[in-house]
Length: 396
Image 1 (spheres, helix red, strand yellow):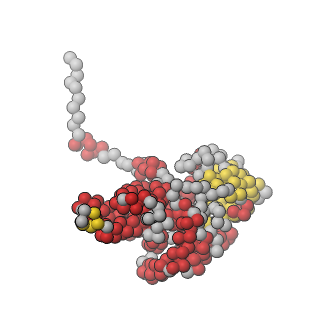
Image 2: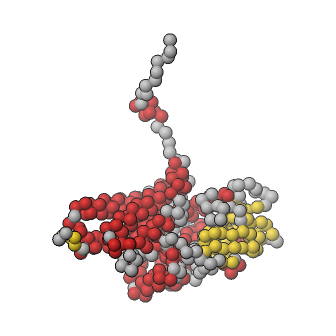
Image 3: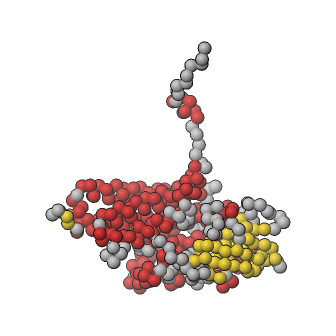
């Protein structure tokens, strides 16, 4: 499945410059620090991005995002060192992508415009108590009723639902025309019509505000994003956007961690010399930096080759970068020694936990490898030419 993307390099430099200026402000840093301390997603960060025209510049009049803007936005948020906030912004933007690309009603287009302006916060939720990666095993339903749909069920993890205005819900669409496992549908529901539970205490990415939602509510038909039977394709398209953004986000976080670690190695002395002068440590960090650089080039390659931007390539990018990110955070924390494991002395432990969370959100490693594996092709011609396996001679 190829995802056709529009790209525009004419304004990307100005976009990066303005975004850098916004994120460098002391007031923005204060929003991030307060959110990390409280463990609550800051609605004000979405309002800020909307007010400063960041989402508007990224989307303009496009029905799909310009990937170079996605890369710039996500990588820079990764460099903030707040995985929860970066993930919340990614989910908000991924929900915009669904509404802009597939929203057919005036109401859905109106909500997309509000989200781009920062006046509405969006989130996406599919996971239930009995179904995570298996989207077709969901139990929550959407049933036709009075010209609209009755939505019933729950979602275990909806981020950042405690501050969101709308939630994109993945549900089984039950009606006479489409029944069975392949009946996934997508709806946009106001959180005012849902019951949002207490936020979970997650291992990492705490500032994303993940909470369960419960619902038994009616919505008009205009709130349907994808009809039964098309929801999985739409969700897969949106997940490709999210996974590309998550890969960029983790690369940004890796660059922050490596830069801070090199600074530590230059200043910290052991056995009379700087840590950086110990060859084993220096080369270990050089290896990590080389792989981060190569993955950044790979993401830029996906932008340059729009035909190659698809569900499989984005799954491969996400799983590869996130696993690299876990290694980077672990090694950097190790190099910091005791200061790396004391949260009062450094953020390395928090960054390590954030990276681990990224291996689950947006698709686990195993699910993404399955997507990659589905495209593996055997080379029988080369096998037959190169392999001559010994066989025993026939008896007699």
